[in-house]
Amino acid sequence: MHDTVALEAAGIPSVFVASSEFIDAAVAQSEALGAEPMRVFVQHPIQDRTDDEIRALADLAVDDILGALIAK
Image (tube, rainbow, N blue to C red; front, side):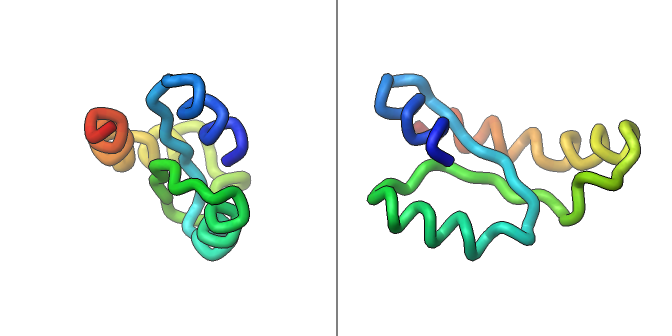
């Protein structure tokens, strides 16, 4: 989240991607930073997935990610 906020401050449209397990943490961190970066959450977990499963998650999220970037 810090990187996304820093990139946005530098004028670089950004969106961070995390798994749904971290929604509450993202909200808390956003509040602590006083920022509301664009974010997209994917199905949890991520770390134990195969490359093909990760690609499938990315395929499901790409439209939301691009939409968030375009909305900026």
